[in-house]
Image (cartoon, rainbow, N blue to C red; front, side, top):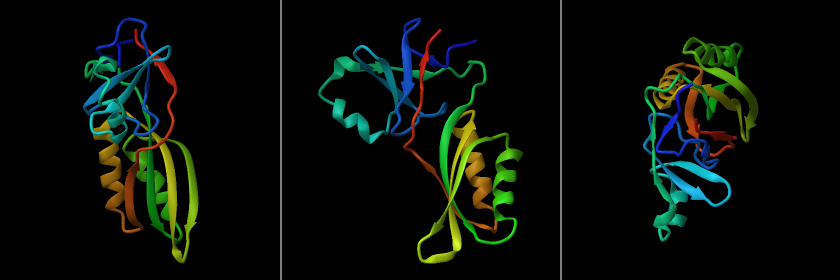
Length: 160
């Protein structure tokens, strides 16, 4: 299996930052966490500001575009109309584009009986894949909004 990240030492462990869950296709940087390995952030992450005065911890990284295709978790919040078949249209759209739903939770919007917020954790290949799913969801008449949620959790991985 090919390494997913270029710039790591062989066997060096890494994890995607839980605050922003970077995906292949985004520009990334690593922060050395003593005793833990590298935490990967998208270059735009607000969380990187805490390391501004510690340049020795920064590691130049890039996604390996030739790596074996992998799936990465991403979170979406989708606002849907409360009508028959709405959830089915959302899940079918994700499936049609090759996304895999890991978790789904519906929450009634306070003061808006006609809408539900659906929190979806899904697996995608990269940022382009995620953006295609979001675009297809937004095109549905039963969808009032769809956006990526940057917070979440990820497990530690090891470079090969």
